[in-house]
Amino acid sequence: MNSIKLPSTPIFKSLLSFTAGLIFTFMMVVSFSLSESTFEKHVPQVDTIMETKIELYNAHLWLEEILSGDETEKIHNVWSHFNTGKKYINFLLHGYGNVDGNVVLPLSPAFKPNIIEVYTYFHRLEALSKKRFENLRHSSAGTYDDEIYDDVFNTFIIKLDHLEKQLFEEIRKEHAAFKMLGLSLFSFGLFFSG
Image (tube, rainbow, N blue to C red; front, side, top):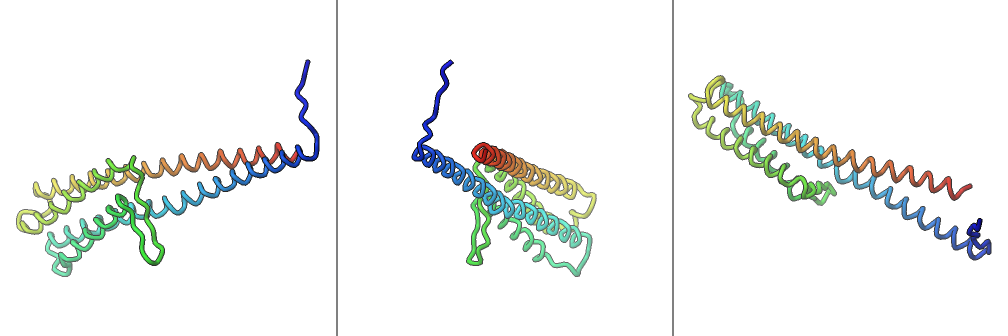
């Protein structure tokens, strides 16, 4: 049986070591890039989704308080929460960066239909909030308007939760790729060390 014999000249060994080192370095750079991408890209996106929920929960809570007769709460606080929530949704759609270095990268195009759905329910919720406030007498708890409002609010939260789960799935896939690359690096190192 004929076996292939690799040359054992010093030049060949040097070339083989250089090539292995180059491949190893490339794999390390890709590994670092994947971990940075997950951290710098997805953590602010997850945070933005959570902040959106908080703003809309607050808007919903304060509107219900005002509609139930609490005179200490002011409607401008409700609209402020809506404006901030809208800002966060726009960050997810278009991205955001400021001079302090805070950056929210836009979600990938695969997320766009879900973001548009979230945005649509956001606008419905905002319009219903204005309608309920304008019709204060007919918008108290248990009324038809209240039930519609709660249904739209719950659907909005469900859509936002779905978007968050989709983002976590992307993070999970990137993490799996990162682990596979780490295993490859380890195997590559073992192969060339022995």
